[in-house]
Amino acid sequence: MSLTTFRAGAQPLGVSHTKVTVPTLGEMKRQAKPISALTAYDYATARLADEAGIDLLLVGDSLAMVVLGHENTLSVTVDEMLHHTRAVRSAVRRALVVADMPFGSYHGTVAEGVANAVRFVKEAGAEAVKIEGPRTELVRALTEAEIPVIGHLGLTPQSINRMGGYRVQARTAETVRQLEADARSLARAGAGAIVLEGVPREAAAQITAALTIPTIGIGAGPDCDGQILVFHDLVNLTFAPAAKFVRRYADAGALFRSAIERYREDVEHRAFPADAESYHLSSGERRALGMEAELQAEAEAEDAIANRDALQEWTS
Image (cartoon, rainbow, N blue to C red):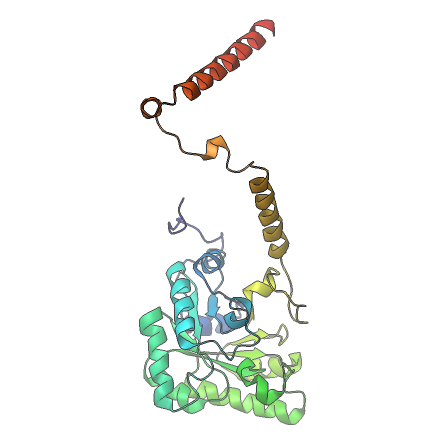
């Protein structure tokens, strides 16, 4: 079966086949149904995540590090994010596809931010965009432009230089109150959900209870309305120690390394490809090319096999 053939009933039992939208997330919060979210950057992993029943797939700017090998998220471009968002969108049937707007794409005027967000919807098929920080004016403008928005507060990776590194945020009563005020402002401006990253569990729980829109946590404890992890962290495809909040569910790195080593060894020992994995000329074309000796040797080998099998059958 080719990669691009969709299978009927690919979602596991118990997972709705109904398309997830931003209003769906709000309804899940009202029903106290946890939201599962995961990053995705390409067709294959997005398809696997969608078929596994993940509710929201974020084409995160974290691809700068886990896919492109950069030191942080700041260098990834709009065109690179569009490229990966298109790949993910083509794989997905059920999950909500959200595109991270990269650093610099919405840090100028509101009009520039809206124009870049429109590109993600029109050119890449994104069904929502995610922006970092309490940018209520931009959220309001995007909402008016019919572009669903996911907010992102707490540890915002695009602010790494201002924050002085990846540091837990909202660790005092004053900063928790400010974070809650920012979350309320984003909700009033029209955000459909808010990612809370790198904040104490108690702060995330208080903000989650205060909002009518869902919160999706990453390093924010279990009391958010949903959770998100970076795909490469989930399956150990990173080359650095995992953060405290990461749980690794598989070791794909070890699996891939073993498979690649076995492949290399088979090539070096001429064990791959085998004859059964090769294509052949017809006997007529081989005769036309003067390969009679090879054909005779094959025929004798086949006769030997047939005689051996007949002997074994007779003596058994």
